[in-house]
Image 1 (cartoon, helix red, strand yellow):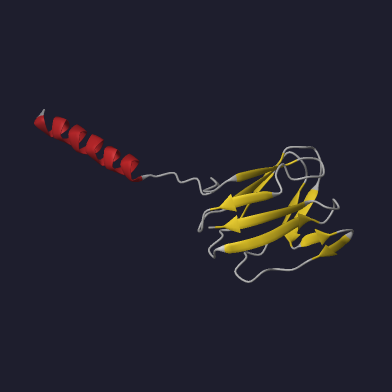
Image 2 (tube, helix red, strand yellow):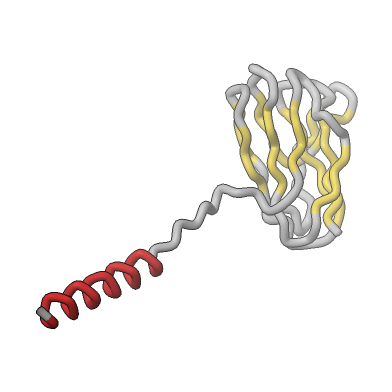
Length: 126
């Protein structure tokens, strides 16, 4: 009788240890702010991102976007990557989101949508 009881206690203890050691980590969770994109604009033209965090871009319209480093200067695209900026080259199909970064260096960085003229976002990392 004691053998069965001890075996059951040992089995339950082993299962408890196994389940307790299983940890599910969601690495897709953003650590920083979110900026919404409409059909042809960013909801805000500027955003502050704490140093070390990421930025989530949320396409809230059924419009495609391709966001890269640089900015629109009038009607001309000016692709450039500032020193310390993470490389940004993400495409959206509409009603989706992507996370860019992390932004590890303080400074001011520009990104823009190559599809929509004038769609610029200035990111300030503090």
